[in-house]
Image 1 (cartoon, helix red, strand yellow):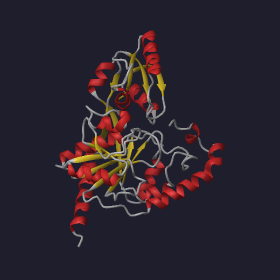
Image 2 (cartoon, rainbow, N blue to C red):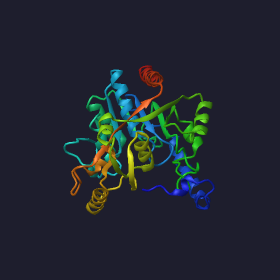
Image 3 (cartoon, helix red, strand yellow):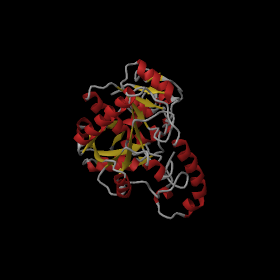
Image 4 (cartoon, one colour):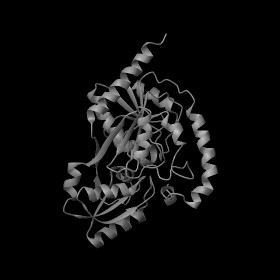
Length: 338
């Protein structure tokens, strides 16, 4: 899905027309969020967002994976496998599965952490626990009431914010903001923008922490691209953020091409991209998530450079305290039950 431009324009006439549908959709979602989820038996950390589209959840999940391992935990990521056809539960195997089967994000993350794909999250929890999980990391699912969440971290791109603040389809929000704020345990603001300052202020009023973080390029990826003119393409939730990150990293971006999120590239599209890059003597570069979708497909140019990034928190000690405290409380709560 490609996000409509009017979602990020204030007082758009089309948004006003769609507002009644947004009110209905939002009311249903807010009502569902009130339901009590099933206890997984082990701590569940949810990494979600208030809106549809990209915000930086996957880099956040990978950063939390690293932290949890440092704390002596065995995290397993739980995903619905958006874009994949397997219902699961299945443990993602990068050597066996494709993005068409399990989704691009689970396939990409499976290189660094155990990932379970399951349409039914309870079935996914059972598989994760059978593989030794001590903590479940939910990739998305903040608005889904199926599982009890011990801590919910909400990720926002600080340069985009929440657009017009309307609920889908009038805007990008998945539910009314007030209903989502009440279930937020911490806010993760990615980037140096100020578009999410108002949301951060609302979270602060509820005495919940705000964590700032930035996407940093992988040194190997950077070395492959510095000094070259590149043709960047991406089919993610916010391709412009990817292009901005490239330029901010000192890379000479000559051309860009944006596709819809989770776009499945055809042979003809790839051939056209490769031909244009050769014609202009440019290096093709894309995201790791896009490359995960391309791997194993026919007609994929072998000289595409993946641009890897990692998320760095401005105050990693604050993140460590937050996660440690919630893990302790989650286990204390379960231990103290009669």
